[in-house]
Amino acid sequence: MDSPRPDSVESFRQVACIAALAVVCVCALFVTSRAFVSPQMTPKWVGVALCAGVAGIAAAVAGRSREATGRSAIEWWCVIFCTAVFIRTYAADGLSFRLLPLTLCLLLCPLARQVTERMGFKYIAGTLALFGAAGALHGILQYAGVLFSGNGNFSVMGSFDNPAGFAAALACTLPLCFLFFENNSPRLKYIAVAAVVLIAAALVLSGSRAGMAAIVVAGLAYAFVRLRIISRKSKTIIAVALITLCVAFYLFKKDSADGRLLIWRCTLDMVLDKPIFGHGQGAFQAEYMRYQANYFNAHPDSRYADLADNVLHPFNEYLRLLAEHGVVGLSCVVLLGWLLWRRFARERTPEKTVALLCLLSLAVFACFSYPFNYPFTWVVAFLSMAVICGGNKITLRRTAGVARVLMTALSICMLCAATLLLRAERTWNRIARQSLVGKTREVLPEYEKLYRYLDHNGLFLYNHAAELHEAGEYEQSIAVFERCMHYYNDMDVQMLLADNYRELHGYDEAEHHLKTAAAMCPVRFVPLYELAKLYDATGRHDDALAVAQQILDKKIKIPSHTVSAIKKEMRQLMEREENRAPATQSGTSEKSDNNTIRQGETPEAEPHGNALPP
Image 1 (cartoon, helix red, strand yellow):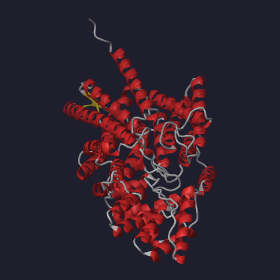
Image 2 (cartoon, rainbow, N blue to C red; image 1 turned 30 degrees about the vertical axis):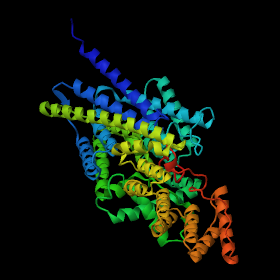
Image 3 (tube, helix red, strand yellow; image 1 turned 45 degrees about the vertical axis):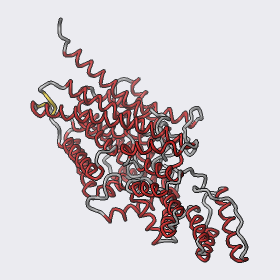
Image 4 (cartoon, rainbow, N blue to C red; image 1 turned 90 degrees about the vertical axis):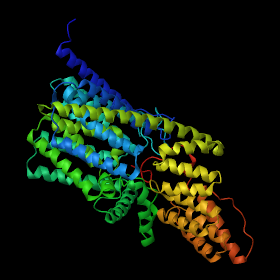
């Protein structure tokens, strides 16, 4: 039998790469499942991780040729940085699912290089742009009411948990359409223009200022290169346009912008405490709210008090990098950007220009949001870097063999971790829903079993501690909350800790946690309400009156039945103290205000950055 011709084998590999990339795009952009605690996020991460694991094994097995591609300094730098973060996280937490994104990054680096070698960038760009346009159409149909977004707070968010993920995916795919503007085929040009219009329209409808800023900067950069703008007048016009755009975006949602200024201010305090190496991977969710509470304790009359809420992200990837990995981490990323620019400057091709614009779009988006919370942006970023890096064919016999072994090992670890995460979250989702229908005590043993897999997941620990509290296991609940605060800490955590201590008659500890909760989110009424009740129940009537007066003087940001009932009860408390009459009960014992459901009482995790609109 004749052996397959080299050109037919290469064609098959190209088709296989395109098919694999299409599957990754489907997983990263569209897959959702109510079987998971986070129906929008977990399926995407698990899907991409499984695809990467299978692709890594296939690439390692197929890559038996003695001829290999030499890695550039950029690729080595990415591998070294990801490995360093991996080792640091492992040293702090041991084996946990927190290592999954880092393992994915280590695997994406060689996979992206192989994909860009085996298929031309025009096929990569066309595939990604096609799926980006499909995602944009999904968002537009949501805005038109044809499709349901699944979140009452946002009408346009695609299949993501927040418009930020939707906007990030569109912002980094729009520059890929520019590659086809230079094509000789008029049909391809028209399709590319239609895709740009579709993506831009969806971004505007989503209301994401970060997304709009990203595509405007990428578009201006493309026009700057394409039209060869060199005159001082033209550059001045562009600079004025950018400044005007920034002012317009600020005024468009002024309260939201001011709220982010508060977050950045408190994050800088966090950075100054550990400026060199930072607080560690994932430390922002554990530490930030404590700094926000300290800020309001020091500035009780701050104009930002009405804008503060629970915060899960600083709305700036560079600030998060500084907070978690310090100046060393940020310097590594800056160096990576410089290496990419230097490599691009050596050989400026249309493909590398478009790839650089994708990275520029992500870099701008990262100034105001959190694009790297989503796997699709990582895929686009690594593919873009691989295109810019290029590669020269050299002989690497032993090194290639070692690389295949390492890739196989990483792929197997990725598959195992993704499978375990899939099973653990499905079980968590099932037992959390059972608890909601009154089977709290029955599911506690299953929570204990899951603890070995999810003991580094802050939301799981919060949910577990809340279930223990509901079952009356207050001491165990406190123990789980103490561990939870190493990974996740906000106003709701402090409120439930206070409830636990109050049930155990630890009134001093309960007071401390209620005060912390009130300082974390000064706009909320419930922490102060619970504090007033605690003072009243323990005979500290003067303190109760002072807090009651503070509640009555407090402005209402969002009117609700709960807030009205709280104010009514506080008036009754003050009248009772004045008249020495017995208290009347109004039944306002809710543990969440403004009709907000606590995360511990629902199997759905809150979206990232839910404190502010996009």
